[in-house]
Length: 267
Image (cartoon, rainbow, N blue to C red):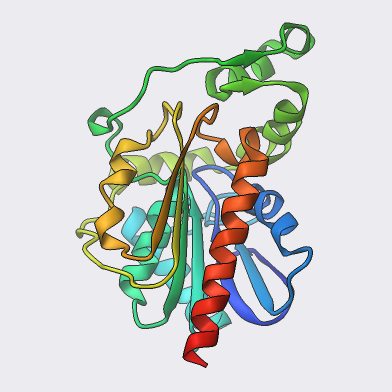
């Protein structure tokens, strides 16, 4: 099964999984700055099937199948190796599925604005709100661009727009809509319960104003991860890594220090 992926660096594997209808660039642009002064990490950025440069697969009809495809890829890319997994939004849901499927191999976890409850009607969500807006910028966007950015952005400035355009909006146009809709209809949520615990360094980052997946559902995961840092960032929506870039990077650096410390203890 051909799943497009990009590998950067050498060392301990960190698997990066993007959100629904996006591609690997969303995670790559968020995470790569945090490796500028670090060595010893192999970053594996994946395009989920039907998204980015990965072709849709007829055998994938639901999220169970999607998870099976990703786990199968990891078994080939890093066989018999421990690894760390990071997931954004739907990718966070996939990441938790990977932890459950390959629990003995996972040594750390990061969940960025994770989807916890697949059924949108059952999520606990804050009201949509805009806290900072550049009206001049918005007036110079096309109606489609302004609508997309306006529907997601809590902080709507030039820097946030450029990142949103490159990481979220443009990749979403490459998604095979028929394939994505099939998964939505046939089983967006797993057919099994996610019931694992993980005793390795974990980071969960949410946006206080995230009206897509919220933050309260993610908080309910905290007892499953005894080594977790949980952050709810103000002036942060579903793209909190863009809107609160500096705080996001600080939290990731702290998490990576904790990962390194745990590894040194075990070596």
